[in-house]
Amino acid sequence: MISKLLSNDYSLSLINKIYSMLLGLLSSIFLTRYLGVVYKGDYAYITQLVAVLTIVFGLGLNQSYSFFRRKKPNGTFEKYVNFYFSQLIIHTLLAIILGFLLSNSLLFIYVCILLPFSVLKQQMASTVTIENIRLGIKLQMFNASVRMFSFLILFLFAESSLLLPVLITVGINIISVFIYIYFLRVIPRPLNTNFTFMKEVIKFSWLPMLTSLLITFNYSIDIFFLKSMGTQIELGLYATAAGIINYFWLIPDSFKEVLASRVARKYSTKSTILTIKISVFSVFMVILAFIFFGKFAIELMYGSEFVNSYKVTIILSFGAISMVFYKMIGVVLLAEGKRWIYFIVLLISVILNIIANILTIPTLGMYGAAISSVASYSICGISFLAYYMWDKKIKIKELISITVSDIKLIGNALKRR
Image (tube, one colour):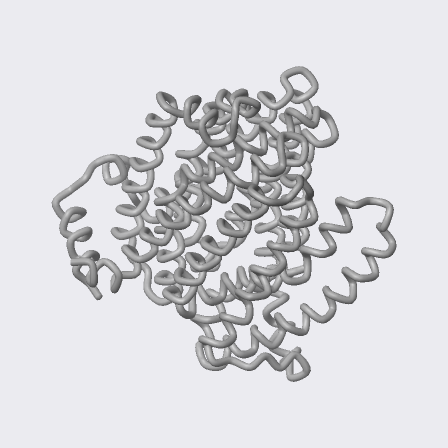
């Protein structure tokens, strides 16, 4: 039975998510207690800014890989890897220059340190998820273990600082890249980059890049506004709540990764609908459990100074179910090349998120940021769902009922090696 679970992509992905969630939770506990409320907010600001810049400097190439992998399967992986490493050289030089120019701001120096390998690691991880999902899953588990033990050491023996967590993250990213290269038996040749092919890729990728930027903004914009319009304490509490919400998406994220790998080869409406059903149910159960036990859990894990993040987490959880639709349906839309509908919905969501943050944070603080995010997530997820149902001619009852064929599909998936 265990061997069957480990040999099935969905099962292995779910096991990875459970393992990564547990170790990620421990990492969060150790890091949060190590940093404290104020440094926690600054660290969240740094990581979210890096996330935004990673999308910009990555040019959206990894977002286009599934499309070109299906269109031109032979040699595409090697061409992408060569271009990824040519970008690494450029980004490293640029980071050094910007580091000197921004030497008066310690937070921006940390961003420059993180950025080059953050871009490369994201590109390689996204590409490997499609090319060899089992390798990607195993490396995620390895990274979760290294991160957890590293932050435990910081918590036990080091004084509070932003530099050490930054250096640990850079080290993990570098190790991850080398492992990808070794196990995929690919030798990066940045000087042999096929720029003719890359022009075609970039021409396609600019929209996915802007789309990914909007996705990240949708997650990060509240952190940026709280940094400039709120207090340091509110920023730290809100960052903690936003981190907790990530664990609500354990099952949806595990299914999304496998779904991305499979729709790049062959698409099935039935399996996608079933994945949505299971994901929505799992998120609902997690929210219900958190309502009853969340306050106690926060105090136990992070300490009494973070208890006030409980109400913020509850507010944010109302947008979690809508994001299931975005996560699952978005994978299908991108694989099918339906970039514009994806982009337009996200653009509207981000614009509304920005307006709502500007209006609510001055009076409601971190609660205003949470309400703004929920409104944005809901508009995004429901819009994706409405379009998907219209495009695939799906009726509402197909999404809210579990049929005999659904049960058979689950059974076949567990049996399939």
